[in-house]
Image (cartoon, rainbow, N blue to C red; front, side, top):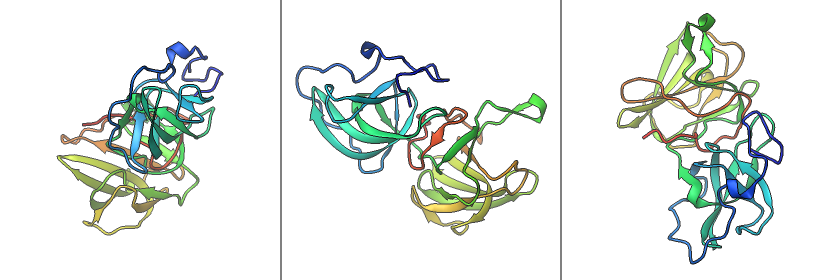
Length: 247
């Protein structure tokens, strides 16, 4: 999130004209998007987060472009916008914040963040002395934290002694998969159907781990790992949108 100070993401310092959802529009808002309680979303622009659903309300923070959130309440119509109350993940300098945002700069996420914790390694971090990229996101919360399905699908248990250790794959259809590595234990059977948000496993340190954490991967239909836009130190909140449109 952003406040009035510049953070490591070079957050805006505060000119309202540079931030989406600042000025009132004339006329009525269009039909609201079909969000519901806990729908995972992400921002498509730097976006004002306000105390109430109106452009005149005090601004609590500014959510940076590609910040994940989850819907809590709405919609409300005011000042030419449809407004939703959203809880957003935080960053290294600011914790999670909940407030009202204009839906014009929200997009529904394909996947939801699988656990609450700190991002300790990102997609472009290197491994093996810099010879390869991580191509996944690590979340850490001390071990034992529940891991939730990022979307509905069918499970597959795997074990990779030299890598992911206890490893869960969830097949979501059309060739897309999410992977969950270094688990301490599974909470669901092999080959069962799960829904987004179901607890499927627990954070651990199995395989070639460096302390308790979750290694989270998004795999496309060609078994290539796709980037999710997290930064080191982000304070991720389970259920918020993984900040990218994957398909």
